[in-house]
Image 1: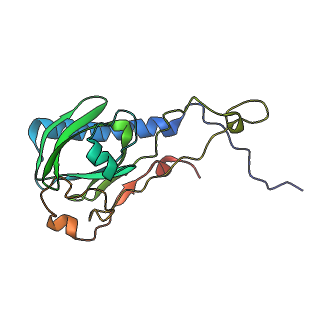
Image 2 (image 1 turned 90 degrees about the horizontal axis):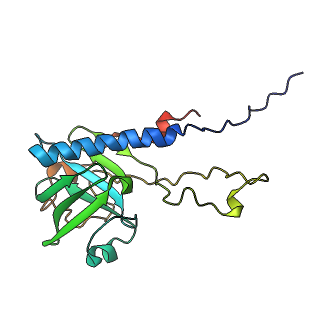
Image 3 (image 1 turned 120 degrees about the horizontal axis):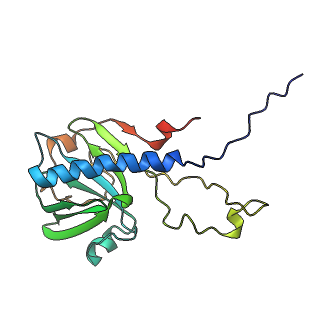
Amino acid sequence: MSDKTNPPEVEDLIRYDILAQEALRTVVKKVLQEVSRTGLPGDHHFYITFDTQYSGVRMSSRMRDKYPEEMTIVVQHQFWDLEATDHGFSIGLSFDNVPEALSIPFAAVRGFFDPSVQFGLQFEAVDEDADATSPEDNDDEGNALPSPPKRERLTDASGDSGDSGDSGDGGESEDSAEETSADVVSLDAFRKK
C-alpha cells in the first residue's frame, strides 16, 4: 500500500520569485523612462502605489506624516520633472494645491496600474534585511527558513484607498471615477501551487 503524502517541498535555490519580480519591475522602469522622454501617449495614465517607509524614498515630512506606510500617486494631467533611472524615479506632483517632489526607488513600488488599458502589476514587499535572520527564523540545523511573503494590495482605479489626496492630477478623471477591474499580474501567477 503506497503512502499518498505530498512530496517534500524543494528549496528554490535559483529564486525564480525574485527574478520574476525584477523582470516585472523592469516593465515599470521602461514605461516611466519612455514617458519622461516623450510624455504620456493617448489616454494612458498610471496609479503607482509605493511603500513610504522603504529606504531611499524621499518626500516631505508633511507627506510622510500623512502617508506613514503606503501611498498611491496618479501620473496623469499635472506632473512635472519626471525622471526615471535604473534604480528609481522622481516626479513633481501637487497635493492639495501644494507642489511636492517625490523620489521613489523601483524596489519600493508595490503596484502599477494603467486603467486606460486595464493593465496592472502587483509586487511583493521586498525585505531589505533578507540576509539578516534571527535565530527563530532558522531550522534545527541553523538553516534559514523561508518566510511567507508580505502581500500588498493594489488600490482600485478609483483611488478609494484614501492614499493620494488629489494625487497630482488636478482632480478625478472620468476613468478614475468609474469602478474598474483588471487582471493584476502577481508573482503568484508564476509559482507552482
